[in-house]
Length: 342
Image (cartoon, rainbow, N blue to C red; front, side, top):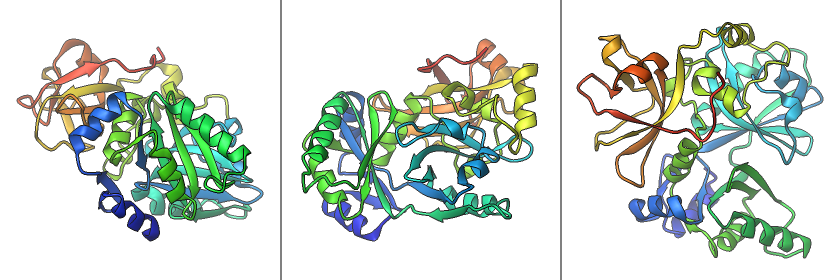
């Protein structure tokens, strides 16, 4: 997290731990606001990698599961970076900025992702740069998104000194966007947004990702899943029409031979115990073998937790799914906001 920005947020009563805003004083109220009001949150817990150079797009096209030709400064793309065995190392949001490409992913994966991708640059004209602290990203969500967008556009068109040219808006889902700006401009942007949105902690944004069925691979879940297991194919993060990339053969074979046994589900757990990404799940039909794993978890406004979990599809159809053991809390399966490919 940018140190100047951290100081500013602390002055705004943010409680910060490990470069992540936990809350602004009342977690329960913030979760409630996230459910039915317009909210805003700092996204410094998500890092940024910039890909620049003449060969940047061609390089990424050969390394990632999504089709780079579909991104622009207005259109972002979800995608995955896989091992040669098709296992996901990172999931991300990708968009174009000026002549470069920006990848947003968990801050904890930035260094390892840069290190691994750099091994394959060879003679390509590509530069990879960690720009996590160069741009401040503020997530905004709720019913007033259209009003906020209109106000920012109006301010920019009128050359408002508070909202200058170093600001862009990236729509990431229905009623959700990221406002991206420089550290110099960020406090003014925050103050302007706060007129119509309530500040909340990062877990609230994570909860919105979960409700949207957007998976975030973390260090605990690296190499645990194929892209289709976390529904990347359902949200446009896998292209079956592009050329080769690491793991492409296995990903394609899984798609066309129909051998996918596990899928990601939206679930709720009623418990006060600490649940973590990667935690194992169990069902009676699998006896003592795990039937799945937690992908992402966040406190629910209704109490307990909401989560994304990869689970054996046959187990979901026939058995109760439990956390950590057959005696653990039972998962309630909820509806995803999109249809899974057959």
